[in-house]
Length: 268
Ligand code: ATP
Ligand code: TZP
Ligand code: MG
Ligand code: MG
Figure (tube, protein in one colour):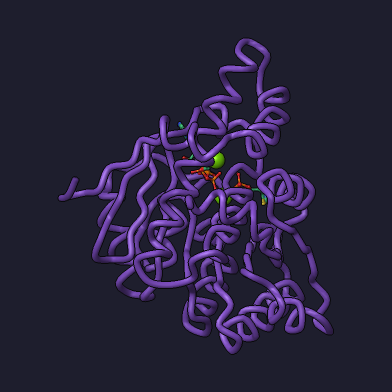
């Protein structure tokens, strides 16, 4: 069975500590996919929620000291209970506070997946790439090399998204080419993707299965976006955003298999 089908059958609980901009969109996207979203931030409960979740997704998009403390407690609890942890280092490199915070988090927590744009991932590993707020700036660096170095440094799967997505565990690297430029006009398209990666990681939390499930989640999200763009041609980002939610529910494993554009680097 595909990982997509397993997500829909198992309906994993995904604990999200995310930002103020994207919380409802993220919850709706996870529900459309067939996962069970739970947004919980209180210091009194995050450890309990993380413990019972299939995956914990940590996102620093609108951080403050209380959010950072909640993220640490949830991450520590997830680590203690072998629950996969996804970190989205939104805006790392844009301010010293963001950069220092994510560098503290990657020191303290064992990550399962780190997902961001190229500038964010570069700044997490102390390499330079310009960033404008939460969006990656221009650069000519080696995106694959940055992803592989980050994966080797943290012993996790790293995903760098953009027109082409890089997915690597530091040894084996895949590129996925699905997606649509309209995703860049919907705020939270990356944040929702990180939570969807969490739902797939809940099904296959480690090893080769984890890498395969994360690759499938990227292709799935990109295919959903492609079909949403086709269905809303000439209408613009608002209609696209709604149709993306529809397609997260409607794309079947067969459609995904037909449309997925996945390539292994140095392999088949
Ligand atoms: P940024 O803030 O730099 O936009 P992000 O966190 O929003 O970063 P993205 O890199 O935009 O994340 O990735 C979100 C989704 O959009 C991914 O599925 C990615 O493949 C897709 N995507 C991003 N840019 C493009 C593009 N130009 N063409 C097609 N798909 C894209
Ligand atoms: N500002 C702080 S968090 C956020 C904005 C606009 C959302 C970023 O979402 P994404 O998925 O990285 O586009
Ligand atoms: Mg984007
Ligand atoms: Mg982002």
